[in-house]
Amino acid sequence: MDMERLWAPWRLGYVQGSDPEATARAVPVDAWRPGADVDCFLCRAAAAAPAHDRTLGVVARTTASVVVINRFPYSNGHLLVAPLDHRATLTALDDEQLLDLQHCLAEWCRVMESAMQAQGFNVGLNLGRVAGAGVPGHLHWHIVPRWAGDVNFMATLAGTRVLPQALDELWLQLTASAEAAHS
Ligand SMILES: [Zn+2]
Image (cartoon, rainbow, N blue to C red):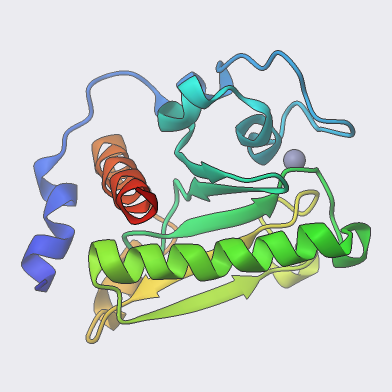
């Protein structure tokens, strides 16, 4: 896949008037998880019904983890992998949660290799606000897929917002690919 095609969704998409941020915040949650922060988007993603997954950018929810598309990506395919529970430190997680998070990291790298021909990944955890965590109360690993020659695009996109349509297309692409692998 060449760069023209890879980044085309950004140029072809257009904003349709609604505020995706506000829409996501308005997604109802019937049963928050114990210890949840109702203002935390990861807690909302963890607890929302599957019917809202597309709105929230949730691509997977396991017994212990949730995988969400980052709305402020460094590259196309930038995912966040978080425990379902609102926990700020690694020591607050039990072995089952830690293992499940690692499984999710492995699985979603594999999905992006298959669905997006990703050639490499930066996988990282910013632990605590001083380390750069944007949501310091809720641990989350970043998976940033990489392609040969993508450095200029990384610099261009870092910290910028992409059009909601591009994120929605990514959601469709990744969930379809993950489903195909499991059927
Ligand atoms: Zn949270």
